[in-house]
Length: 372
Image 1 (cartoon, rainbow, N blue to C red):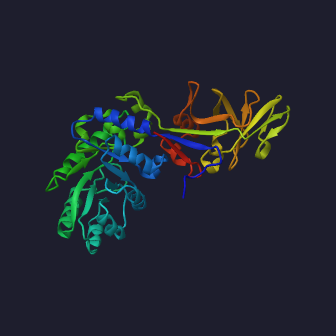
Image 2: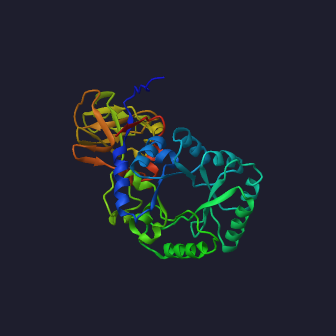
Image 3: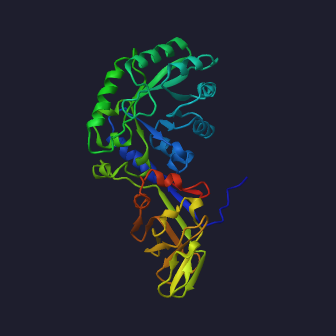
């Protein structure tokens, strides 16, 4: 089959150079020999896992992190040799595939290890022990449970403790009380391990950007800021280097019409023209990730902001034009036109959420077009 032909003009443009620039800038901030774990879960935070992974590896990342076994299988089917770590829980039924394909699994249960030991593995299964120091999600919660888990892994024989890690709940916040408690607990738990694993990693994006460099250990996990986004407003104020956003969202006018004063737009007739106006129709809607709550959000056309009016439909929406434009005029929903920018953070504020969520809600119906 040849290259896929996209007919609808709605597309997400992913600048792989921006991703690589963010990684190369990070490398300058790291201690010597600290590895970069490129977090490409959730389809690369909506940017596309394979293209992002390949770009990240070229820029110097050495390990790829995903959330689920299915994500790991997908990445391994395209990338043959790079280390892959599954950060979430995996069923024991996945251990055979993981061992055969150099996929490291997160472990936090003695019972899981005992069940996994029943499988005949031709290769050693690499495990990363997750310690719950205060996130309250998954992980070993006590020194006693960590000791029992370690003993079970050693007894299994066909497994090895390749890594140990934790996840900080408040690294992106100004208040450091909970964060410092987690750091102290991790240090205490680390002393229980009979042998230091190959990779200790505790620093998520916020930690590596604004916390003490001693927490970089053997590797850091680079997630949201690899894509050019700050983990929080607090972190954004103290970034050690500028971030370059990788994603833009674009479409084109497919219809332009003039409405007389008093005429309405869209389902429920929620918008009524107060004067004669020009309305443009865009081929993008909530099935693409342009959620209905984004009504009123502006887009860019000819470097000017134009608001979305009326209710956003499943496949289309309408905008109030500053003047009559021709069909085919480029419209930017996220990105820059003529030095005017609409950021993912702006969408996040409109939706009362965090920037992480925005690229993840742009559905697979919107093709990702890569520039490098």
